[in-house]
Amino acid sequence: MHHDDVNSKVDISALPFSQACENNKQPILEVLQTELQDFNHVLEIGSGTGQHSVYFAPHLSHLKWQTSDVTSNHRHIIAWHDAYPAPNLYPPLAFDLTINLRPINGQLNTPYDAIFTANTLHIIGWSLVKKLFALAGDTLQTDNKLIVYGPFNEHGDYTSEGNQRFDAMLRAGNPDSGIRHKEDVVSLASEHHLQLVTTYAMPANNQLLVFQKAK
Ligand SMILES: C[S@@+](CC[C@H](N)C(=O)[O-])C[C@H]1O[C@@H](n2cnc3c(N)ncnc32)[C@H](O)[C@@H]1O
Image 1: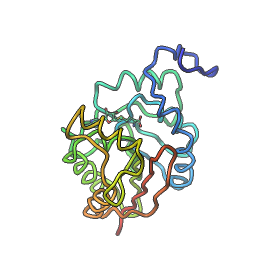
Image 2: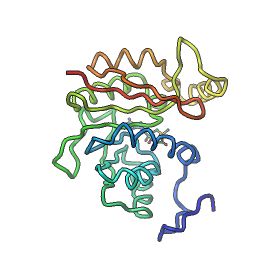
Image 3: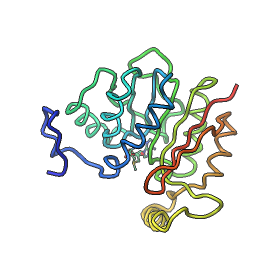
């Protein structure tokens, strides 16, 4: 069994499991507790296994956490939600950047005031990164936030040898993937009126970028 939790009534040993999520969930949560304290409704893009969502939702009980991903991941996310239900945690929306131009508004009629995505920009191709930022810019209103977690290059270079190896591995698997240059991402964001307001250095040479929609 690779993960235990005495609080779960479901046998979680069979669930898909990301060790990276276990390692980064607490540091990310600490930032979200600050950045999202006055926010209401978060859309998570690329929820993956769903591990982040089941950890964040109960610790951010003042807001609604809406998961989403391509449909092939939904059974994993739903399995984690079944193991760790929370009243403010919402089952995944079918959301695929190759298809959707805008997120659908889910089960709720309140608009999203924040979008969170972790470890997606280096997986999807740059054309889909562009769609993600266009969509975020269209969806969010003034002062709403887009929060992006993952590895980034800076000043034209890797920030660590580990990231360099990771990038080579990603590109060997899919030439469209790869660690993005932070400057390119910031410039793309500004095209959609999303200004980088805060950068958090995170463990394992990752960063958390907070963008805010300008007027
Ligand atoms: C490396 S995983 C990250 C998962 C999770 N956020 C985490 O931090 O562990 C990348 C995620 O991007 C999602 N993804 C890939 N292509 C996508 C697309 N076209 N539209 C939306 N999500 C996509 C994958 O399904 C997967 O959940």
